[in-house]
Image 1 (tube, one colour):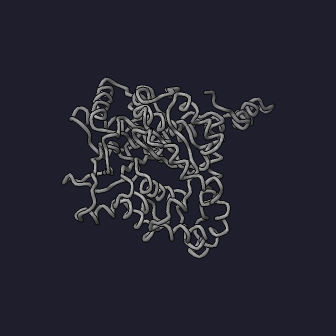
Image 2 (cartoon, one colour; image 1 turned 90 degrees about the vertical axis):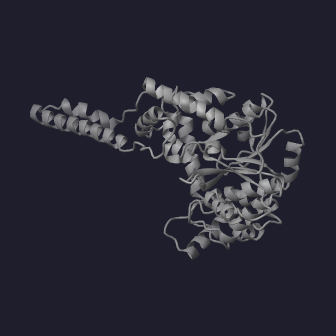
Image 3 (cartoon, rainbow, N blue to C red; image 1 turned 120 degrees about the vertical axis):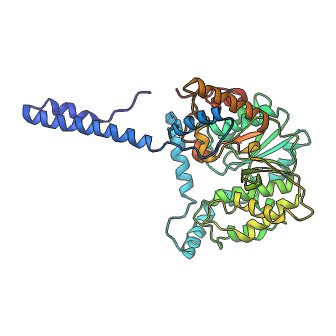
Length: 426
């Protein structure tokens, strides 16, 4: 891609052709020095973002290679088309309308939110939301080997190639499964166009506008939702859409049962044999879990653990602490009920869904540069094929990386895509 050159970058040529030779030489030299220094600073700045490894995998010779790959990973911005840049602008503008300004008191934030509530689409009830339950029943209709749910509370224009890959991987591994996306924005003509390549291949996927009042009815979240919808509750500094997603996934599984997946996920093998399971994100030296995560949830309808999750969300909601209403919530509750009778569920080890932590995900995107690194990639892929149902890609971090051809992610994309038009970086 040719780099765009601004007029200011070309000014030095005009100075170097100035009529006064001495002045011309001085100005030209100064500008060249500035450009050269800026180049050095830019290089140093990039190097300062390298990712340091904090976890060991595999045998000793593999372990050394992984350290090299992880430690040389640079935060690189993927090449983007003009359309991608427009999407990014649309996304930020959409979010700014529901993220409160910084440094407000609780009272000021409630007043701000009360003014914004009428324009917050996800909270609205209309003719479309009234059709939600019937559309869900019609969609699944006892024809699905496995039923999956995702949520998307963002503009349809920000649903990109990475998110589409999540859909592809789910349906390729589960060709007779059904995937329902709870999203008002995706439940549109634009959303249909995004899903059409999969629909044309006879996969069962759809987007439906959720009815939150229905989802939360007769659950501990019912009163919480009414307070929030009326603008009488503090949403906190964290985007309310993020916390709503944490609650919606619990409620939709409680009402219908099935599997919830985040959209920054790539599925590697069938979930059909899993039931009432949640994944550990990390384990301690004693091999007991230290943190769970809610990016993957697999539960039967009306499961009592889901009820406890919803109850905890409503009673301890805090919109100012990241993770408090999500991964930390499920960790708190499982810790409380682990010794109590009546809760039948399984905690799967990190390799099931979280085989790489968020601060090491960059190594999965980097192509091997040596024979040793190629061996590490092959060993890691073999390990994933045996123990991993899917990989959470930690999109908050991994969106900074390009998928390089020959990398772990490059190989996984090739093996688990359906449309397979992904362009790799060099």
